[in-house]
Image 1 (cartoon, rainbow, N blue to C red):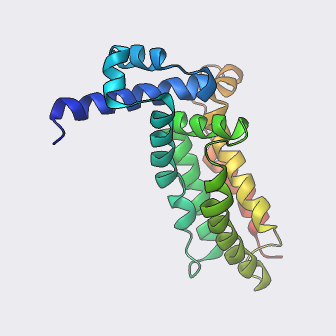
Image 2: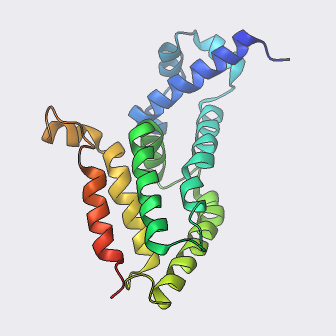
Length: 198
């Protein structure tokens, strides 16, 4: 049975690892850095996790479980524009609330997705294919403007996750301003024009 202290230490390690992986990437992160960030010794960390890989894998699994929920939530029976706009808003909100998780995922992809290739080619591709088919159906029925479903999804990812992945750049350019100030209104305007049936 896991004790309260063990649960607390596991949580501290995972929180520290998220911070280190988001900043350093998988290759740059070390167990020593994670232990130091968690305020634990390396041997203590190794009591809970046997490797950097096992910690990273657990973080990615937790991330993917929540990261894909907004895409799954697109309702084929819903209003097409409303569903796409709600998806965009949820992704933007996730960038606001989970910037380290976004950078963890981005770092993995920038390295060629060595630990996620099977998932991306399997479960993620199947989900994107399914939602792209829904969007294509909306376009074919004249309920959405003529957009490429895949590029629409990719553009939502790019335009929302940018605020998390490139936070430092945005903060330097918009010195003293909240990085996401006005982002939702701008993206709503952009996608509203794009999605209007012709």
